[in-house]
Image 1 (cartoon, rainbow, N blue to C red):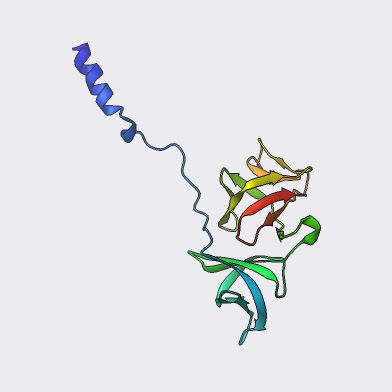
Image 2 (image 1 turned 45 degrees about the vertical axis):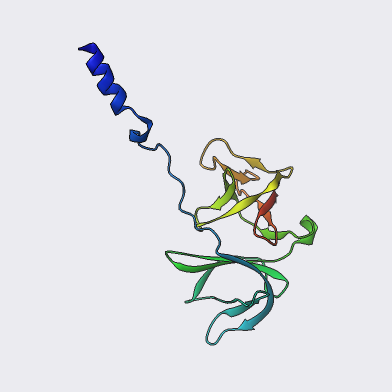
Amino acid sequence: MVAVVMALLTIGCKPDSVAPTTTLAAESRPEGIGQVVKVEPNDGIGLRLRLASGVVLTVGPPESQTLVQTATGPDSLAIYGHDQRGLWVLWLGLDPKRGPGCFALPKIGYDRQDLIAWPGDGFALPKAATFRVEPGISLATAGDLAGWYSTGGLVPQATFCVSSIGEVQSVAP
């Protein structure tokens, strides 16, 4: 009798029957990345970003949401995708004081192993293989900011350097 019960328990405890304990976040991933070569007014409201690839993005309501904007002109980087709200755009400018090829994304970000996520804005970007954390930044391990890269303190801050191919290269104060 004990052998029968043990056999039934073994069958019922296969790894396939165990419910997952964690779920992956639903942040959107980029669909495209491109160098902005021209910025034009849009009919009515907003702007049109012309990318080197020929793609034209209309930024501003009601066509899209600009989640982060650190640029206003050409020679900048547009990263874009779609989620349940529609088109989203990150329009990032070069920040030469942080190093060559650094497009600044000034927002604390959440570490997700191979990604950095911004759950409040609904997007995530891949980490570069050489991702580094600069002095003055830490990864919080407890409290409300657990898992977030920031300077800590009352007003946590961080600026991520994003490469021209849309990978997060580093994080600095």
